[in-house]
Amino acid sequence: MEQRPLGRTGADVSVIGLGTWQLGGDWGDVDDDAAAEVLDAALDAGVTLLDTADVYGDGRSEERIRRALVTRDDRPFVATKAGRRAHPFEAAQYTPENLRAWIDRSRRNLGVDTLDLVQLHCPPTAVYSDQRVYDALDSFVEDGAIAAYGVSVETVAEGLTALEHPGVQTIQVILNVFRRKPLEELLPAAAKAGVGILARVPLASGLLTGKYDESTTFAADDHRNFNRNGEAFDVGETFAGVPFEVGVAAAREVAEIAGDSVPTAAFALRWVIDQPGVTTVIPGARNVTQVRGNVAAASMANLSDSQLADLERVYDERIRAHVHDRW
Ligand SMILES: NC(=O)c1ccc[n+]([C@@H]2O[C@H](COP(=O)([O-])OP(=O)(O)OC[C@H]3O[C@@H](n4cnc5c(N)ncnc54)[C@H](OP(=O)(O)O)[C@@H]3O)[C@@H](O)[C@H]2O)c1
Image (cartoon, rainbow, N blue to C red; front, side):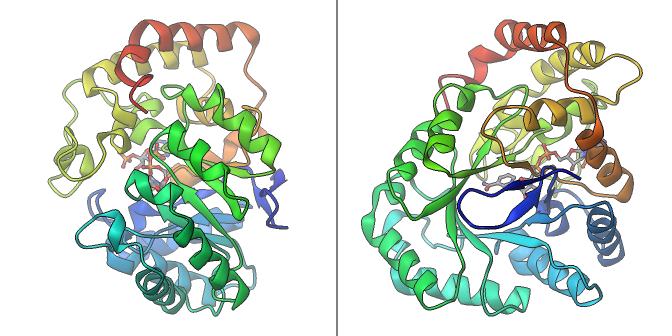
């Protein structure tokens, strides 16, 4: 699989990574065996970057990664996140002491002395411009608790703010066929600064597989049920903020553009990794079939000019009004 340098971290990572929110919770049940199979299948297929967070299943995703890795010789780059354990969820909670406690817990969960990468996990906007937070993170790099840090953002504006801080090595942002705004300013600015981009929610929570229809329902413990209107966290994380029925109709058009011989999911992922400035894309997967389908995007042909133009038209006609000015 193609590997790309992750910003200035010194690490090369696979162009298709693995998102492991599904291995923690919020996506219906994924049991221990299924989680282990997903991790093994991804690593066997050449995935060398795993994205997790301390709050995915309250640490379950990180612990499952630790358990999967003890049985293997290879060592992927593990990007975790900190900051969503803050109670109340406000900027004042982002103290050096709290950050350190969250990071130390992730080190224990993952069974490592030094975390490869810690990303601020979509904190309140004010945190991205708080120099004390970056100073704390710099001190954790110096004492070896973390090798590098980055940010995960909801908005392009937050990403641009983070880029003003030279210690930031990576930005994680929603980028997919239905979320194109980062292409305008954020990705060029990140490339210029030598900052890696992790593209998340690349399938718009599954919409861009083309497999749902207007009657599809989701389990009670799946955020695609309980966060449909942003009840639990930013609605942009659920179906990329696109109203479900709008997304289903637009995804039907995307599937037609992909054509019968190309799975829509791989087509949508190929679009993401071909955007200049993207380092890696981190689709989430609940089973081995999904992992393999996603990895296939790395060896697929690039999209044609007419396919690219058609995707842009679908965005402009159906999606832009719902998302472009919001994130
Ligand atoms: N704030 C943050 O920093 C943040 C927020 C969100 C996500 N993330 C990270 O980004 C990762 C990716 O985003 P995401 O998981 O939210 O959304 P996503 O990758 O856009 O969608 C994942 C869903 O797509 C479906 N899917 C995946 N591969 C498929 C395939 N080949 N064929 C058919 N269906 C497939 C599955 O849906 P079904 O479950 O219906 O099968 C899966 O649960 C997460 O796992 C997490 O690591 C970070």
